[in-house]
Length: 250
Image 1 (cartoon, rainbow, N blue to C red):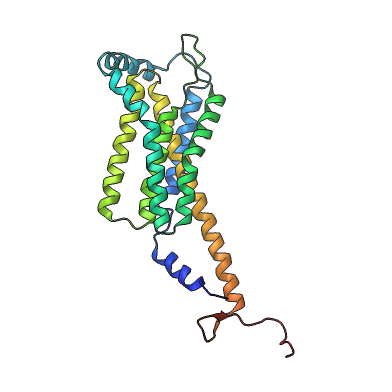
Image 2 (tube, rainbow, N blue to C red):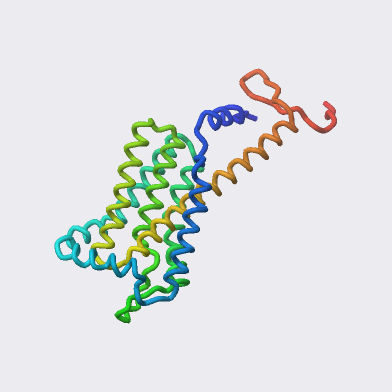
């Protein structure tokens, strides 16, 4: 049997871990923000004082900026798809299957959680409309995609300059998308902040869970190899594990 374990272990040891040190704390903090804002806007139709004050600026900005804001909002889905494809390509090239799974998971998971929270909180407009406002799905998707591409590039050993440039660009795009939703007056400020926090919470939680499961799997594999013992190298480039049972008769 060909023995590929040591080579796979050496590759894993040289690659950065999927979960950066800041991810667990960020997931917890972002989840707290989502829950806190949900409590504040729970089943309300009237904006809170901060949202009401901010809406004056939003309505003034909409007069001249609505067309640009609409174009930015329409670009969200193509940008999210692009971020997912870039993440998958970078992870596939380095054979980081955990990062590939992360790239495939975060955007759909953010969408599902966002829709679920909308149904639970049921924040609506004061004009009697049925649209659910909290949290902003655009902000959630954009933030989740931004975090994913940044984490994947780090895990695939992209250069520090590339990682910094992508992180800077992703951050500005999230800010632009959130601002566009405000200028369109389709969301209150708390909806956009809650959406960004939700995307951050879901993506960081996904990173954390996938990395934890990967460590557990590698730990079990290492213990299994240690119990079996090192392979015995045979002529022809093949390895053979020592047999645990009694020797057979020839």
